[in-house]
Each structure stands twice: as structure tokens, then as C-alpha cells.
Length: 446
Image (cartoon, rainbow, N blue to C red):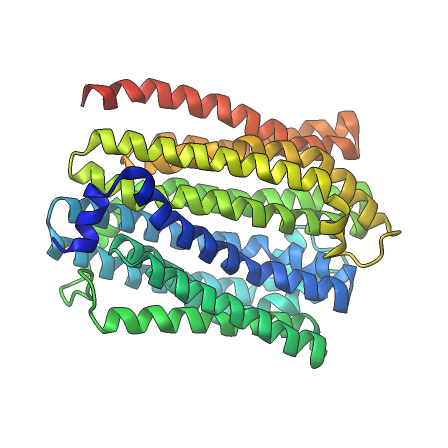
């Protein structure tokens, strides 16, 4: 086993976590900045209606992203475990089969969405004003989607292979490219939502190219395997990534439900307000997700090597970090709600701006627990306990938000929408801790 792999099972746990987490968080924050920067340029240079339209289209990507993440995360966990067991040949086979499967799935789903774009947009909350804009945005960006699913998947496997900095550099370079292209296409050339779509799509190609070249150069343990793809192995490993699929698809469904509810309660201005909130939350959650996502290769590799005390220490470090981050986000949202909203909505006297500021005063409480919920979900995935992980993921991102949106707006009108996410995270936290305590006894025995 090479040094980069042995470090995962020998390096001090806290140092190991931050060595992998910092570049991963930085890359994810900058990767998510692609959508956030799009939103800032659209909101300030194109208008609130276009911002609402793009947010209406965003849930569509969750289905493609969810399927890809299920395959990639499941494959990465299996690969990490095989590395821990010194079985490099089988690890390479899982890696190759996962990449091929993601390409096929992304291609098929993207084609179906392209054919039925308008019907899908209307189904998930598009109004007469926002649907044409959302259709334009979606049809422009869909041809580029394969590059982002495969590119991000390659970054996950690069981290498992001991190259976290390279993975981050690839994603960061793509994010910086997107910012530059947004400025050119939207602010300078006035291309509107089409410009935002082209900027994001081209940035996907940049990240993919860097990682693809790395694996072609065969620098690490992971290499393209030329044996026949093992579809059964992909299905088996994907099952362990089920929570990632549920999490991503649930985010998309929940976003669509919020858009539909806000449209009913406050018209297009309400959707525009939620768009601003959604992007602010997205950035905060990316830090937590980056930390939680870091646990997958670290815990799975130590699990394969039988290092159970190290697993407990890594988990403690991850939970502590995400809690502190949640406190920091809470304070930031409490102090700078107006400034953050003004990034996306120019007119501070508008209805959308006022709704967004009020929404923040309620949603900020969710961040105190969301990171720990993500960490526990990733822990169960890495320990090959997909059912527990799936329960946590589906509760926080679909089941509870759906139930809350079904009842709270009827009781409290618009404020009922504001309560939804904080109540959902609290309920999920109680369930997640219960599941952890029940399964922790098994880990202690080992």
C-alpha cells in the first residue's frame, strides 16, 4: 500500500480529518458558487423574475445528481473498503464500472428531461411568467450535465485514492472559470439566463478535464480497468449510496414544494424571495456537507482495516466541526440578513426583499443541527449501514419538510413556511441520535 493510502489508517485522526476536509469544503463551496454566482448576476443584471425562473428549474438537476451520487458515493465507499483490505484490483474494477454507469444514467435521464422540459417545469411550480425563462435555461445547460456528474465523481475517487488537493484544485478551477464567464456572458454581453447556463456548462468541462487527465496519467492506485464492467457490483455498491440519492432527490422535491407553496402564498415575488434564501442556505450547507462527505473515505478505509477506535475519533472531530460551523452561520444570518439578501435582490423596498429578510430570521435555527444530521448520515453510509443513513437523509430533506408544508401554512400562513426547515432538522436530529446510540453498542463490542 502506498503512503497516501496508509496515511488514512495511520495519521492522527484530527489532522487527517482537516487534511481532507479543508480542501473538500473549499472545493464544494467554490463549486456551489457556480450556481450562487449565476443567481447574483441574474438577480442584479436580469431581474427578480429570471431569478425565480432559474430557481424553479433547479429541482430538475437533483434527480440526475442524485442518481449519479448514489453510484459514485456507493462505489467510493466500496473502493475505500477494498483499499483497506489490500484488494487494489477489485477496487479498480469498481471505480471503472461506477464511471461507466454514471455516464449512461446521466445521458439517458438528460435526454428524457430535454424532451419533456416544459411539462416538467409546469409540474414543479412554473408560472406563466417563469416557465418560458426556466425552459430556456434548462435546455441550454442540459448538454453539459455529463461533465459535472462524471467530473464530481472523479473528484470523489481522487480523494479515496489519496489526492484530496487535486480534487479540490479541479473543482476550484471550474468555479473560478464560471465566475469569469458569468461576468462576460451576463454583465458584458447581456446574454441573460442563456449566458448563465453557458458559463456554468463550460466550467463543468474545465473541472472534468483536469481530473480526467490525472487518471489517464495513472499517478495513483486507482486506474481504469479493462475487464468487463461488473454491473451487479455497481448495483450492490449503489445500494449503500442510497441515502445520497434520497438526500439529493429529496432536496429537489422539497425545493419544488417550497416554490409551489410560495407561489400560492406570495406569487412570483415569494418564489424570488425563496430563491435568495435557497442560495444563502446552499452556501452554508455546502460547508457542512463538505465536512460530512469527508468522512466517507476516511471511515470506510479504516473500517476495512479494522481501526474502530480511529473511526470514533474521526466521527467526533467531524461532529464538533459541523456544530461550530452551524453556530457561525447562525450568527452571520442574525447580523447580516439584509446584506446577504441584497446580493440577490437589488430593490430593498420590494416585496421579495422583505419576505427574504423575514424568512432568514426563522430558517437560521436549522443550521444549529443540520451539520450533525449530515455527519451521522455519512457515518452510517461509510459503515455500510445504508438503511439508517437513508432514514436520516429522507427525514431531513423530504418527509419532514413535506409534512410541515402540508400543515403549517394552513395554520400560520406564510410564517408556517418559515418554520418548516427548523422543525424538520430538530425532528431529524432526535431520530438520528437515537439510531446512532442503538448502533453504537455494536461498534463498542468491536
